[in-house]
Length: 254
Image (cartoon, rainbow, N blue to C red; front, side, top):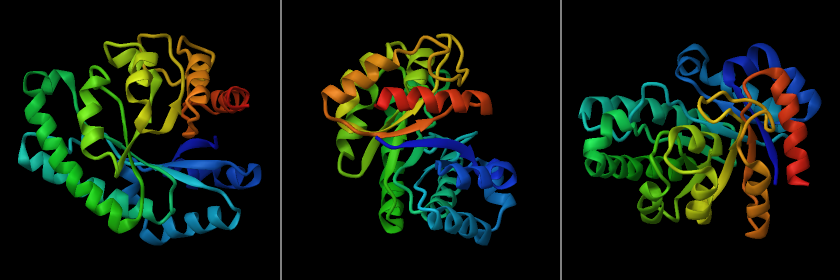
């Protein structure tokens, strides 16, 4: 299992690129909405080249703030897909091992029209997978606000050859109705990546592994028993916790 460190592209450029090159860190490049407007295509190419020259591998996290690719409002859906498509084009520059997508599902908005939302999201996925194939990038859907793992099974089954799962156990713990291990037991056949951060069980704090209640030892034991080797990504949100996370994850992987 290879370990990656999640860093937004602007922070990578402004602060951490030289450190990552020195420490030989594989990077999950975050593409929040602002970097798509603030940085040129050539800047993305330059950073990708520097990482590749040092033999570093990458994954990419697509933008998600305010986006809803499965929106029932066609205007919101259209602009969401436009923004995500632009990000996928930037992602392809890095030749990533994984490209992570949020569904945009939210229980407060979509609860009473779950099946309508799901039909709209599947329609969006057909388009996004077509784009991903053209760009030759692997697309993986991350669980965020979805209520339970069973809600996603038919989505993964419908797109089994072209869509993987990015498992976020911390999201499962605070945003869903089921324990993170229940998510893993249901959806493990689709797993390609796992986002690793911890929390107290009530707020999505993005702490270092071991600082909260997420049962990572049981998660990694399960993965090993199943012979699974997903991409491992550190998503701690402070520099101090990132160092702690890398140490904890190396121990879990070993």
